[in-house]
Amino acid sequence: MRRLTTSKDGSDTGAVAVVVAVAMLALLGAAALAVDVGSLYSERAQLQNGADAAAIAIAQACAANSTGTACTAPTAEAQTLANSNTLANSADVRSVAVSGSTATVSLGKTVPTSFAAALGIMSKNVGASATASWGSPASGPAVLPIAFSGCAYTAQAFGTPEDLLAHQIGDTSGSCTNSVNGMILPGGFGWLNVPSGTCNLAGLMTGSSLAASSDSGNSASQACQSLLPTLLGKTVILPVFDGVSGSGATGTFHIAGWAGFQLLGWGFPGTSKNTTGDSSLDINGNSTGLIGKFLGYTTLNDAFTLGPVQPGYATVVALTH
Image (cartoon, rainbow, N blue to C red):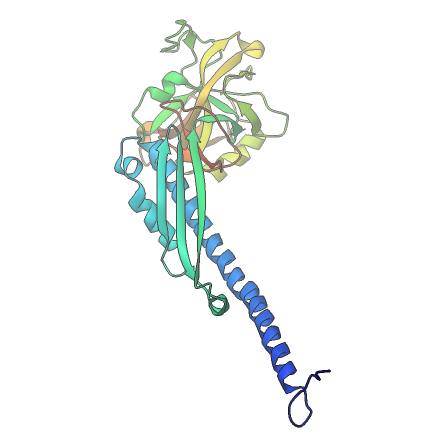
C-alpha cells in the first residue's frame, strides 16, 4: 500500500501552504468585495448626482427657451455638470435626449479596480441616468391667497414694475375683458377665501373655480399683513384667473394657470410699503393693491405638481426618473 508522505522532517508544510494560498485567494476576494465594490458604489452615486444635475439644468433651459443652444445642443452643459459631480472630474456623457417636455441624460465611467485586479478584473464600467420633465403647475400652494386677472398679468412686459389695484368681484369699471366670452373681469387681483387666521391656500388646482372674498382685495387680514414683509423682494408663484362669476360673497374665480410675481410693495389700510424707489408706484388714497413685477419663472419646488406646458405661464421642473 502506498503511503502519503510529508516533508522529510515529518511536518505538514506543503499542506499548510496550500491552505494559506486558498485562504489568501478568499481574502483577496473579500477585499475586492469590500474595497472595489464600495468604490464602484461611490462612483455610481457621483454619476447619479451628475446625471440628476444635468437633466434638471437642461429641463430648466428648455422650459425657458426651447430653441436656445442650451436646449438644442445640451451635451456640453451635461458634460460640465457630470464632471463637476465626480471627484476626478472624469465622467463620460453617453447620451443626451430631449423629447417633448423631457430631458434624459446617461453618464458612464470606467473605474480601475484595486484588489480585484489580482483576480484578473482590471476595471468595471459604471453608469447612471436621469430624466427631468417640465410643464406648468397642475396644482400647488398659493403662498398669498391672491388670484391675478389674466389681463393684469399680460398688461406689461415681464420685469416691469407696476401697480396691481384691487376691484370688487364683477366690477364692470375694469378694463380687463376675457377674450373667450367678453365678460368684464376685475382689473387687478382678488383675495381667495382661506380659513380664518391663515394666509395661504394649499392644493390649489389649475382649472378649478374658487370662492373669493366679498371684499376683493380692499383689505388684508392680520395674518396676511404679518406675512407680506417676509415675502418682500421674493418671487412667488400665484394663480391667474381668466373668468369670474357671481359677485360679493358668491363670487368665484376660474384659475387658468400660475405666474411668477416678485413682490416689491403694497398698500392696504393700516400698512403700506414701496421698495422700487419710484414714487409714481405708491398706492395712495382709497386705492389698495400690490406693487411688483411679473417674471418668466421656473421653479424646482416639489410642492407643485407637474402638468402640461401652458405657454406664457410659470413652469415647474422635476426629476421624473
